[in-house]
Length: 202
Image (cartoon, rainbow, N blue to C red; front, side, top):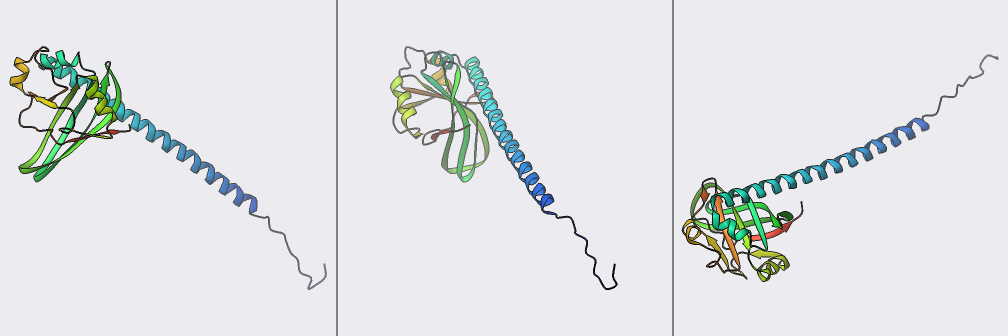
């Protein structure tokens, strides 16, 4: 080699490494997105299953405590059950809960109930209710409505303890009956008039 002659060494290109790195990151991102989507769908399914189980358990508990509810439930076209509704407020309040629609002993849909209330009130209260559709016309009116508001359309009769004690299937001829319940049985003083029921996806 002559003096002054430059020597150059070819450095290995990094392009294959960069390409591999980008491909690997994209693959990881794809796997993660699929995993997260699967996890989310599984969580939603589990949530739906829990809600359905709680609603069916609440209905059976109502049947055990209130014979009139069982007698009507056996004849109902469908039953909407909200196992747990939270009502809270101070002067102005709100309530919200989620439940299921039961037909033929099976869950066929998921719904939410929500409403606002005004007046002297404070604190938090939890309760649930079962709404029984006794006629096909009442059930169809509910099914076709995008949002069913209690008090608008078919008559909804809220059954209290006194009515439940004296009720028979021969005397109860209204379209829809609602039983509002808590941990100690039927609850008085809880109004569902004006609450809106909306179908939700689970």
